[in-house]
Amino acid sequence: MMNRGDILRLRIDTLNSEGEGIAREEGGSFVVFVPGALPGETVDGRILLRKARYARAQILQVLSPSPDRSTPSCPLASRCGGCQLQHASYPFQLRAKEEALRDALRRLGGLDDSAVEPCVPSPRVLGYRNKVVLPVRWTPEGGSALGFYQRRSHQVVPLVSGCPVLEERLHSLLSLALPFLKDPILQPYREGTRPSGFLREVVARCGSRTGESALCLVVRRTPERREETFLKALHHHLSETLPGFRGTALHIAPQPGNFIWSGTTRPFLGATDLHESLGPYRIRFEVSSFFQVNSLQAELLYEDVLESLGEEAQGHLLELYSGVGSLSLFLASRARSVQAVEEWLPATESLQANAAAHGLEQRLSVLSGKAEDVLEKLARDSFDGVVLDPPRGGCHPKVLERILDLDPKKVVYVSCNPATLARDLRILVDGGFRIRSLRPFDLFPQTAHVETRALLTH
Ligand SMILES: C[S@@+](CC[C@H](N)C(=O)[O-])C[C@H]1O[C@@H](n2cnc3c(N)ncnc32)[C@H](O)[C@@H]1O
Image (cartoon, rainbow, N blue to C red; front, side, top):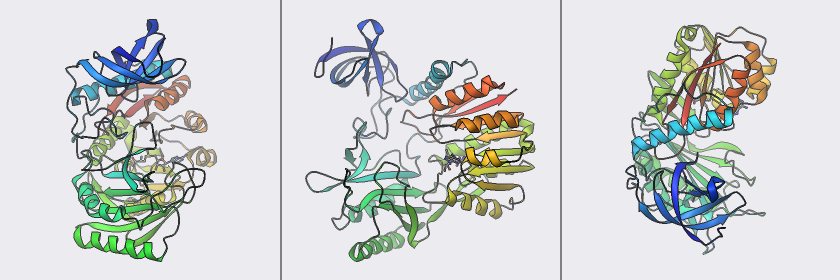
């Protein structure tokens, strides 16, 4: 029986969906999660947490390194919660993501995994992220920590040098902005039952192809006079020094909790939107709206969605969870009509602007609201295909019920979470659909996350 603090020799079998090594003890009935360990390795690890059915250990020494082990490009990789697989070679990462999808389908969906294809590699494995969210937190020493959350914690690992997965443009923006953002005038947020402080998160975004960038500061309240003067100086410094800098926005979020977009976004100085080019489209998005973080790989994903629709791509399409319309534009280039549905108001406004900017407003329209509510009111229309790309939580059961009721010829489901994808596919398969192909895409190199495109027909 192991206890917290024990040092054990562990043989790693496989990875869990979060990229942590798994060792099986006590005849296989008890698992030990070991972040940073790879399958086939033997490690010495210290037990940090012990529960009834599992434990978590910290690696002390890797005794037999896997041939897939590689040196992380980031000195903070073992502490930072952002990347989980920097210690693994890129071919291994791709295999691990394919396996994570297969495992979720079999174990959580009770589904056959034979339609799973190899994971499509990202055009860039470093320097690919067009967005970063940096929490700013009060430290017991009375200072401010600005960086990334540590694994499984709300402790912030301070950003000391650049983060290798970020686009070059974001490095330039952050190196100019950080000296301002760490200034004591902008009091760091202090979590707890009575939160205090001013600056909660720093969101920096850019267009990989357009070179545009923008900053959004998530703050607890409206700035006071001296904070406002200070933020104006920051904004002017960025717009004078950084080509393509669009503007600084504020998101006022007084509510405690982890969802950062819980308040209202308002322009501070300059514009609150920026642009990215994907395929032939120049796409507008507002700082608080969803936009795929890996632009070059998103383009490949959208082209693949279009291809997988086959001849149905030319018919009437329903697109749920459309965001600012990035994928919608690809769809509307071929379809007779695309009915998009999106709940985030700034995103629906961008979608309309994007459709108009490309002369597609006759073929692409958007209904604003939650998919589960909008679909209830939508007249029983005949759609040749339904395309859906929900957030990590997957679809509301009513959405899946309604898709079965609409009975399209094809369903293309894009998912960033194999667990909820498996759950939702089970419902569609039980309702009469068959899975034709499942293609994982690596949108998030160095992390354990995987995106999947699933195609279903009758
Ligand atoms: C993963 S993003 C996909 C966006 C788009 N397909 C793209 O590639 O840019 C999911 C989108 O669903 C929206 N969303 C989340 N919950 C929703 C719901 N219940 N109904 C409608 N839209 C929702 C989010 O605001 C977000 O824009």
